[in-house]
Image (cartoon, rainbow, N blue to C red; front, side, top):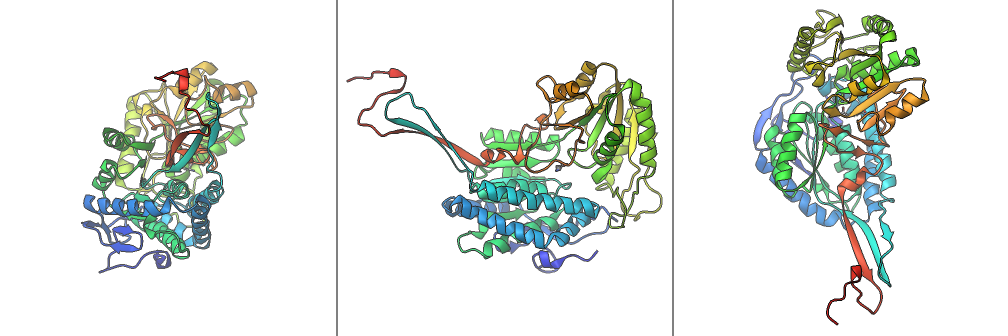
Length: 511
Ligand code: UN1
């Protein structure tokens, strides 16, 4: 695949920059990397990386930019994001191409990811005129209590390979209208799309005369770059998306300096299918959620909890549908299931299937690597379904691959218990025609996840809602609704417009 050079910065000495601080690109003081495309294992490019020291430089530049950016009126900050959105619309094909190359997504899903960026731009532009506060009745005469939201400061974003543009965009576009510069540490697997994202910001910023270019920077690198970002008190918010162990490390590091973090970690997403469900719709939703993006979304469906009377029929339907899935090179027309990100992911999938069998599971289909019909250097697998006798240990962990566990339930209470009986709490779904079951599922005694869907699969959320989850998923909320509040600091002001100085709680102090 030819690189879409028109959306990328120039190379120096045959290498793409590893450090981008506003308009200044540099190789970065870390070792160069050669990421491989999941499609065929071929090296996509040689790219520099940033050292922990470079991360400090980016944060310093972000802090300086913040002093200017926070004074620019929010609707004007929205204008920057509006222009970014327009550039993304113009370049959607090239940007999506990079997502396919580096993350192995099929074009429809790669385009969908860039569309999420466009959508969150639109959302953030509107938001830039709605960063509203409150006035609160004061207990004192001639006093006002006023709540305002102010820009927070530089935001560090750590993101994963599987949504290499959208996750940064949710944080970045909202953060920018909130008045915060963004310092981004993307996955080492996806450096090119992140440089292209930064380019879009730079080009939009260059078309305005009141935007400090240093509102955006990219620090490519390994875990030590992420660690440097988490440690640095100049990062006023650290928003991290990825594995639970990574999030735990970030939370501990940020917590040690009493900083603020926003975590969006693993899911172990479940769906309950009850006897009154529309089977046709359920099967379509299951297949998209479980095998879309080759099972590599944090919202991918991992656990299917089906009523015992329909479990056999469901297993048969799914086996039939799985047998017809077009797996292979994601750039080929008609393919729905692309590659796993690499060998480690494949090994993890094999390992989990072996463990599931040891724990009493029956492999209904899939699990093998494709021997033909796909590029040799890639890891193409047949999506797997394992029928489990119980929610055993392996089912409690997230395997980032197209591996679906099928569990049975008898009573609705049991279904909810099974559903909530895992440490993660990101996305969940119920398929039912019964309003009582649906309302119970989304109610206080139902799903304990951040996302609880009815007759909709677990993956593919829109940007307008707050996105994130509970328990080991980390508790953060990104993107829509009032997630913006995390990117700002709240001030409560008591204003006395009278000529007396009454104290709260009626305290009389001296005269
Ligand atoms: C992720 O996998 O990190 O809801 C995010 C979805 C997408 C985002 C997934 N909008 O599946």
